[in-house]
Image (tube, rainbow, N blue to C red; front, side, top):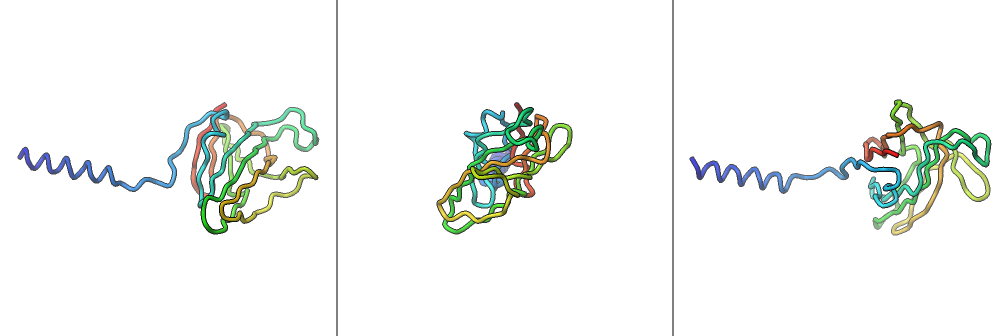
Length: 151
């Protein structure tokens, strides 16, 4: 009996050691930690370098009161990868979902566009969201919850 228990214990241990892990576990982070914890999705590494739940005063009046997110997106793969800003979704503690509505660049602001990132390339972008984001918040990439963020 003792030998059967030992063999069973070894088998369970081996199964757990080789259990396939999900692509990425849900991270529990503070806003200040986002820059050091990249989110992984579809071969892309997305580093959120700034996240603001809302701006009381903004340089462009229609941006006031809205959340903003600044990020760096890197393709670590060997082929082009597509990224759509609409795959990025934030849900606040009040259940309100906010999405990118304006892409901010040096010349003006525009509607966010989907784009393809070349192999081993990276780019930075900033978005104004559809509304205010209340913390703690959840961050989704595509269909997956990838992080829970507190202030």
